[in-house]
Image 1: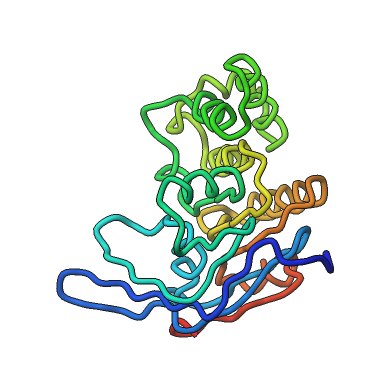
Image 2 (image 1 turned 90 degrees about the vertical axis):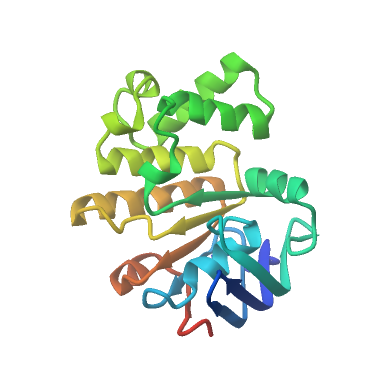
Length: 236
């Protein structure tokens, strides 16, 4: 665990969600930070606000819901709650990597796995087309996917749940982020594959020195990987 300055910090964050007939205060005055090389686990029951708190400032909440955010969320010297959408998109791409809990929904089912990774590498790491392809194959191999050259040309539906989650991790790493946000990354996997995915995340963290924010309700996962724990209940 690092003793350096936080590279992502949230202070007094309040998030209200508005739909057509209802409004909800999903996050109510939460503060936390994460430092390089540190794993911070965000724990709470379903509906406690874990995902909204973590992904809301990044502009990654579902469409069709009006969001009102107050407080502060800072990364790379920028206030995420006040910068423009294009700036936020750029910062989100190069500073944050996100592992979503359902990779089948997060990956484009119409595109092969490899080109999705290569596009991220071209956009945020500034690589040429051929260099981005090599980087995508390398990321697939690093994520523990066997025969990465072959898997580069596979569609998401042609891969198992565990392999898809590894591809999701590769996609999250394509822009070489400083903060990795893992949203319930082992929810739909069996126990053996869960342990492999968690060890992969730990290995990447050790090698790259990145910070990890782990969203989970599994206290066993927390016990095995977390440096610090944040417990959320009803948004607090």
